[in-house]
Image (cartoon, rainbow, N blue to C red; front, side, top):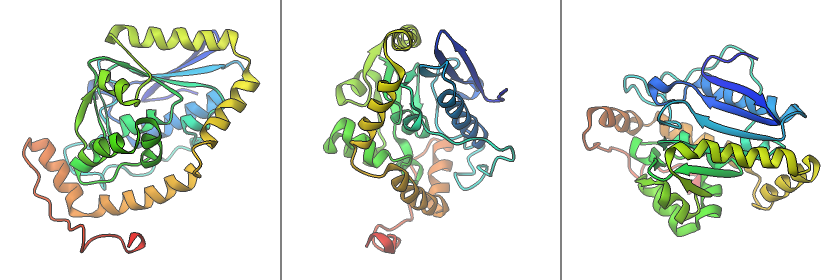
Amino acid sequence: MEYEQILYEVNDGVALMTLNRPEKLNAMTALMGAEMGDAMAEADADDAVRAVVVTGAGRAFCSGADLGSGSGFAAGWGGVEREYRRMLPMQVRKPVIAALNGPAVGAGLTWPLQADIRYVASDAKLAFAFVRRGVLPELASHVILPRLAGLSRASELLLSGRTFLGDEAVEYGVATRAFPKEEVLPAAMDLARDIAVNAAPLPVAISKHLIWEGVGIDLDEWRKREGKLFALTTKHPDAREGTIAFFEKRAPEWKGSASKDYPEELS
């Protein structure tokens, strides 16, 4: 299938998916997200694919959701007309390696959290910046990140939204290994090719399923719950304020109340 905002190719048993909006630092749109899910489904169904590598074109992996002119999360993220298959990296029955070749922020970091292995540029700037935009982290990051980094470090990263570098991501357990920027993708491809040749596909698929099942929580249900709460935060005025403040390069003026606006279902 031909895509508009990603590139997808298969060679020597490895599917390479490249986020391809380099002029926007590969900022994620609804269309890009749909194409990413479709490419994951394509790799899953193709027996010629033994491993998957995901990277970004240009100098970034993904700068997060494309917020356009600063109108916020609730605007500009309408549905995609074309029918795409939806599959996340953790659901693919082959190893998925995220090659974070540059900045990875927001959804550009929670999405590769669902990969099996993350290689990162040592100096790449990373951030779960959601709370700094007035919204909630998503894609089961509240489950996955504490499993990777531990509760204390995950809390620091998710609740502050601060920026950290690739080397620190490895120290925290968020990434697997760090490399100079130019070596990230070649290293990921080397590992993927090694898996494609030397690892039997059936036990690899079963092992991957058991690893994710071992998280101990139904991640599909968790994503749905998180998504509902994410939508709630996108509708709050603070989501617009966080985005506008980011574009205007100023401190945000939050209006939300942790007591008065707190969702009843969590009380």
